[in-house]
Length: 102
Image 1: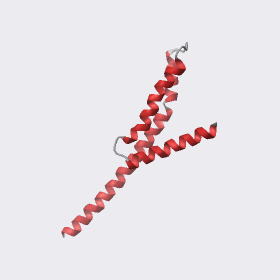
Image 2: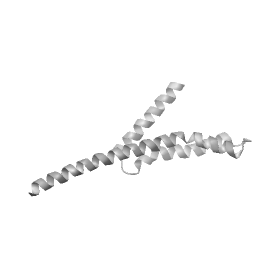
Image 3: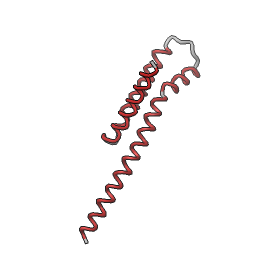
Image 4: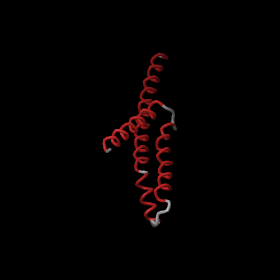
């Protein structure tokens, strides 16, 4: 059971990195958005009929959104790396254009 959770998490992380590097600006928000919506669904399903207090709901919601936060951190790190790489390529292209102009 634990191994399947670890494998699923590794696949989600790899997929998020691939989506950010290959996709557009906002495509990297697909998986975090999906996990955020699923956290609402799970909160509703698990806590409906429960006598938990408001604090219980908040703690459950925060725990369910740990994957969302992790995927968002991955998005921002990979997006920053992609932008830095693009800036380096643009600077190199601009340098080559200046050399050709001379």
